[in-house]
Amino acid sequence: MTVDAVMILEILIIIGTSLWAIQYGVSRRVHAYEKPSLKNAQVENLPKVSIVLPVYKERRQSIEKTLDSILSQNYPKNLLEVLIVVDKDDTQTLNEALKAAERFLSSLNIKMVINENAGRRLKAIAMNTAMKHAGGLIIGFYDADDVFPSDQVLNAVLLMMERNYAAVGTRVYRFRSSVLGGLMYLESIVWYNAIIPFLRSTVKITPLSGEGLFIRKDLVDSIPQSMAEDALLSLKLSSRGYSVGLLDSYVYELAPVNIISFIRQRIRWNKGYAQNFVLIFKQGIQLSYAFRVLALYVLIALPSALLLISIIGFIAVAYMAVIVKVFTLGSLYQLMLAMMISEVVVLYLMRDFINESMNMGRAIILLPAYWLLLGTVTITSPLMPVNNWLKTAR
Image (cartoon, rainbow, N blue to C red):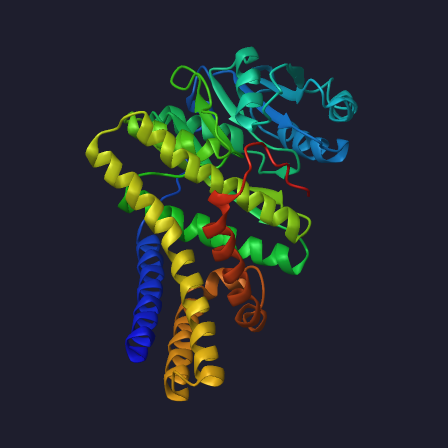
């Protein structure tokens, strides 16, 4: 019985390691991100673009940072409008937004939109309020504290026109000059450069992020209400047969300021994904698409679940071997060796990503603890009694 338990844990470790190796291998062979071949001079009539900036409990400096990036865009300013949407009872943010907008009024077409429907604080509700006032044929979404290249809006529009995409997303890198910020930056690099290309090429569903997101207003009349509205939008678009693209660009965003804010953010994301799973099946979808959605969720959640089970199992085996004496020390060393080999393999495959965010020595020490934290939060998030925006402190 004890040997069987150790063997099961070793098999789980092998499955988790193999899954990551497959994801990495597939992502290296596919080209998920694109740049338009069209040039601005080749397009006679560029469409009007509305940039929506939903803000909640934000500082003036954070709003100004995003407005600076919008101002730097090489898209014709007469075809660009910015809608800053604020909840009606968030008077402090409204004052901060007004101060921020004042500096840009001479160079940007900025409109302040008040969200009257602020009872249940969902970002999607604020986004939909702004969409009702948007005059653009294409709508882009950003958050406060976002920084992005000056050609992002133009390239997103050209890619949508060229490939007839209903929506286009991009990479969103979250960083901060702290230990947690470095780990989050590494995680976002892995997510956007390995996991998303893998999901896009296998289950044919592309998870979108809410920052650097562009949609066609004639095809998407509203953002679905969920704590992970961007993920639910991805599912709805793919279920309707619309094509979604990934722009070869990026958005830099500040990572959560501390571990509490990080956990709150992940609870919102994970609980939102769980909500979306229920919502998409309630709407009634074809069986083939249901299998794709199920595969999507399994591929996203399985590595974290296997990691958490393996670590808990290792702790249990260590206790049973050292204290209770049910397992032999040989079984403990065998399991320890399997976990060490697994970590070495994963770190080797991730070496290019790690080198962009931290040195390998720190990664060897910090990543297992970070993975354990991620696994714990992922597994427990659906149980948390949360149903609102859960503002991320940056």
